[in-house]
Image (cartoon, rainbow, N blue to C red; front, side, top):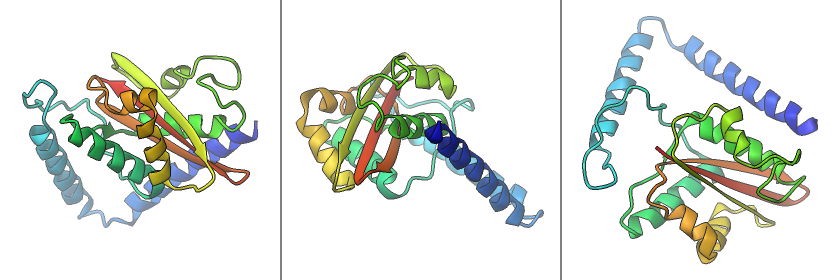
Length: 194
């Protein structure tokens, strides 16, 4: 119950922060910024290699790129570096997967399994957070006491099953959640293929 309240508070604060950020932009510059952001996103979509060697066509239904920082950003960065070594395309982060991963990270201190505390399968979080249009999916979970994303990634890459998820060529998008509780840091990676 407390974790649900914390997650709801986190989502509410995120909404308020994004609203305040928009409100601080002078009215005349907001459309210009929006146009520049859309242009950057279109250029990114044109330049992003697609599996199979082709180029991805623009798809306006794709979620916006997520700003990544801290441990979450480090996990995504290292995952993509490992994928590049294996000649795979980068995983893209999106809002829905990030929110779902944050929820899972908050759940696993209560039940450290690929099940949710209420007994449902872990992948029900994808439906709950409205992650759409995926053909394949996977989850990596881990906790450590160092709290370092680099340590989490080192351990995952040494584990054959977790490594296989990170280097799965069918996956195109990633969500990462990090949650601290009782001196431990819990890490979650959610993957989907679109």
